[in-house]
Image (cartoon, rainbow, N blue to C red; front, side, top):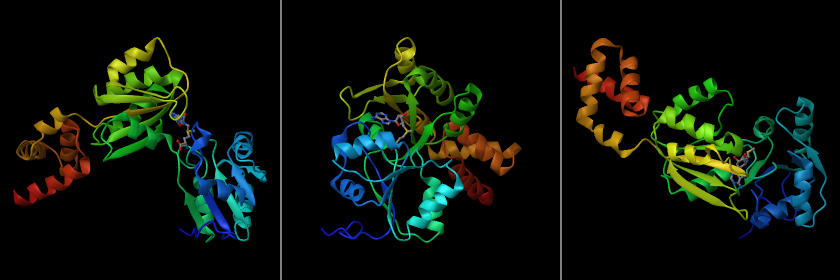
Length: 286
Ligand code: SAM
């Protein structure tokens, strides 16, 4: 199939290139061709990207790029995209996903530059596929805050979502994070996916509390994705339509609609917006 994005004379613009998350063999042919044809590679850490380039036998000019880089650095890259192929990479995986690039893509779009992406490895997606947890609906939450209060507040925001949750984590913080998740979400099914695509890849499944206990005295090494299943069947079963309607009517007796919806959503672990829509219908019928 002809490749319109990266032909012999590729269009100038911004090329977002995903790179391996541990196994250099996972670099795609199109990603390698794009790196080879770059006029400049904007890299999170040029030393890390140099290893990938050396694996591919390439020598391509690089420049460091972070979203907190000086505005002038970003503007200079955007200016180059008018005539040149600028490739964005991060140290591993997909740029912008808990990695730099968001501001550069926005700036490139605002300037009307050609922007394209070469999809590839992403630890969050790889973790979901390994976990055996529901993959039809998920929320990627990146790294949780370090401080306990901020972490608990963030977890509380996710508690009502009927979706699998995906977090990035490090070994030393893992047990505390799992315990905080059990506390804030209830003791759900979960998985700890570690060192994906590397020699010691593993995926350990269990309840959040069992996983927290497992890692408490033995923090694991390496890179980690935590995947947490949605609220359990018990909650869903209890929340049949008649039960929900009764609960909403009951809550609306002494609360405004929005507050009633919020309380019912929290009680049954459901989406607040869905319950609010149903509450409006019930109010209309009353
Ligand atoms: N942009 C990357 C991506 O697409 O996955 C993620 C960058 S983020 C700074 C790095 C975090 O991703 C690590 O701390 C870890 O939580 C997760 N991660 C990266 N590589 C991994 C791997 N091979 N196995 C498990 N988790 C990994």
